[in-house]
Image (cartoon, rainbow, N blue to C red; front, side, top):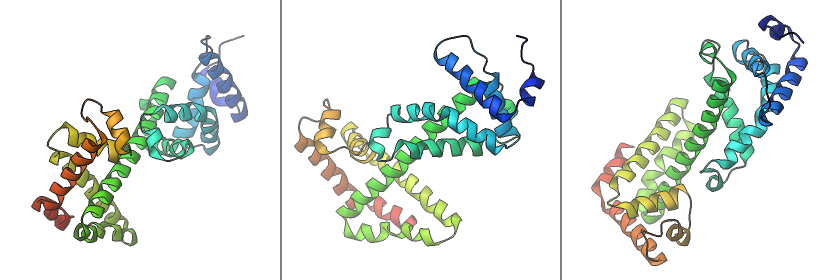
Length: 243
């Protein structure tokens, strides 16, 4: 059989290209000699030519791999979302991220798949950060009625312009960064990460950080001290006034 040229690849109908891509991918996963050019051509048509049919083939071919990456990600089990949710977000991010002018910088299939894996990591980290910010806000709001009224202000941005929604989201990210800076020691950092990032219960926090907490009561004590100090802080008040 004569070797396939680039012109041959570009002349292949989409159905044939999809078949060869699946076949070569199967050989790769069985550690057999394989030709990645068929799958790369699918990406070229999808990203460079913006071919929706080629993009659908890519989604079909790589969805199991992406689901594997999602389910193995350290933030997945605490996310509270189905793996399919992150699968779709990752593919959307790739589609938007690799524009026709950027595609030539991806010279082989490995580079494209590394980018796709990076998209999985990115969307899952972004989701975890948004969730942790919301959990911290809720905890502070529950601990202080006055702060609750002021903290609710960014929520009104849901009915404003897109620019205002982005600004509100940035304010929450700034708040989360500021809260981390207020932690006095490793125990308080662990409370923020354990209870508000990983959504762990106090007993689970102790199990997760056994060297930091001697008991569940210790977890409660550190949490209450941290929240009480935030309520008393003038800087907390200044932050809400600014936000």
